[in-house]
Length: 255
Ligand code: GLP
Image (cartoon, rainbow, N blue to C red; front, top):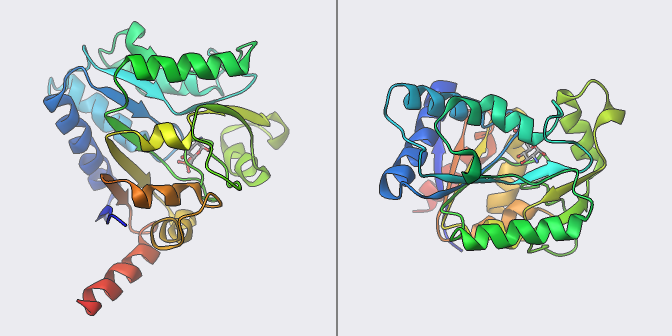
């Protein structure tokens, strides 16, 4: 097992700064890198920091490419609840990324299977993901890879778990508006990224974060697969890092 690099931070500003430093480093080393991006409330401080650095002339996205993790099935890109809209509003509209360099899953695709294949092929043609940003669901999902009997490796259509729909309802007017299916990058494609940065914030992520990185590697906790990846950094705020901190203390004592 590889040890992920754990960065436990006290404040949101520090959380955003540390994550943005990793993006800046990737962009500096490879200006035409492929960035794997995530949605949810957790990456928002990072996106604000990236925009601020771009405005100060510290970051340049003119040659960068991006591929997002997932999209709800049945939501058009201009639907305010779609992840396409989320990314435009919270990042793409504010930086100098070229539209043709942005890869997003089409939630309205008539043929979901063909759409997933198009996505995989494009990521492949673009040379694979250099830096994959991830959040973590309360049930251990990454992207929309829900707990299952096996890791699904490629981009696929998935039925959302009810606890995921309930958790994500915070961004919808009502639970019944949350789609029941989504398209998501597979665990294998996520795992193939050269570097992975997982962000976790808030008390409700503390237990699953520790289970994912100190528990058994199992498709029942999809994020646990990352234990096997050679280059994972986790940035957690004080609340999300609470259980992890206990493990780190035990490791220190054992040394
Ligand atoms: C959604 C996304 C995930 C994300 C998760 C956590 O389910 N598909 O990629 O990690 O939400 O969201 P939040 O950051 O709001 O807790």
